[in-house]
Image: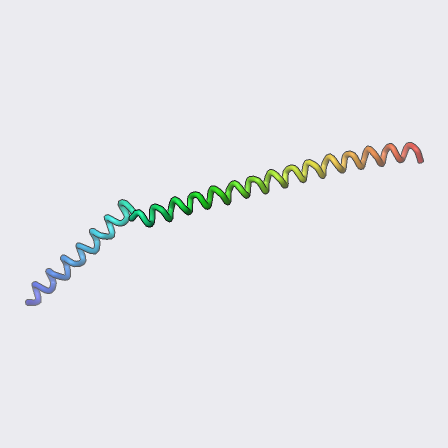
Amino acid sequence: METSKIIQKEKERQEELLKEIEFFQEPPAVHKQSLINLKEYLEKVCSEIQQACDFVKFGVKFEVELKEDIKELELMIGRYI
């Protein structure tokens, strides 16, 4: 009697292990869709970050050009004063 219980438990354990192995070999469609959604979301976020970086670069470039223009104006004003 005890032996049959042990054998039954071992079979159940093996079945659970097989289910886990199958799950990790190929995720269910729901998980695949979640991964696809996550990938699309991360691509969108990366795109937005890139746009923000481009905007900051433009702002820095504009600021540098503005500072150069101010220096030129200061020199011109200095000549007339």
